Length: 396
Image (cartoon, rainbow, N blue to C red; front, side, top):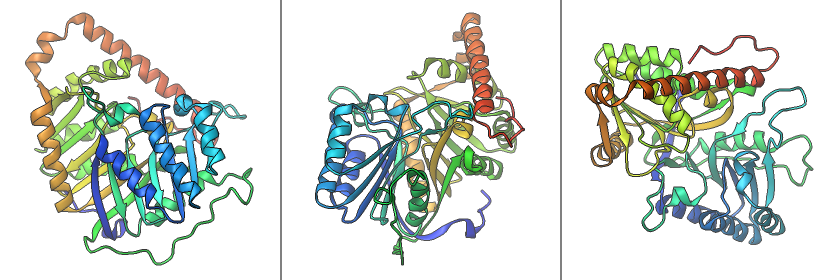
């Protein structure tokens, strides 16, 4: 892989990989319990279940000991967050707000959804990933957690994360007391000295940084690439890049869900199997539970972890955050974890299996689902586009 320009990445970070399950939520609770000054927590879903209540209890404890807690929850994704939990949080002094309560704004634009999942503590530690706060990401006896990843980051880029979170939190209607005024000075540099960059997708602010990063990674891959994708519907541009990479000898593995919580999206993804296999790209399906991960590694040098899915909903309809990591030691260790999952918990879909086991009726259903998703994505783009934007995305 061609090494990105060093100025795009910041040195001096400590980065720890977190996997969904008890270890992830333990790391979050530990960070919250150790908070001294402030916490920013922004996410898409918090369920009113054991995991959600435990997480909110940790935030309440922090608030009661004097930590300022800002909690921003997407209004659509957070529908299952009960009035009871909201009352408990606000009574404990937590500053709580729903993001974009209206799906359509006053000028008839489709409202972006807050899809990133970020916990920032004291500006010194950030956890960025793809897990929502719910039992299905935690797991229970006899019920394996949905597969996803996050990274725990310490170092200078936490100030960039704080800047992004403050921009989303500090709306004009907030009182001075409710606004976030925290600033970071003299950030700590860590001996691990891992280079990272924080990227966001926010169509309203002309930010499509994660999409551009994926395109660059595919374009410059030389030897191998692994993609775990929960809702995989890349656009024409990305498919062309994947095809070109395979033709120049890059070994590409794409891991997809065997079963999905979004059946129509799964069927639309199935429609792309023919394209993937024709281009000598290997497909694996994750069997053990639902696949919710959205991560990638390239050439044992670069990797990305976050909330971004390779589809136009993440490009034009959601606010996303990913951490790009440029470090061979971290990336190779992550790559080994992904390869173990592929070996032990996945099945490969071969050309023969695809042609023999996908009936004509199934393929028709996949094609229909794909066309429906394509139409919905284009409609979403039209409704979400600013009036100054006139160019639609390339077709799915």
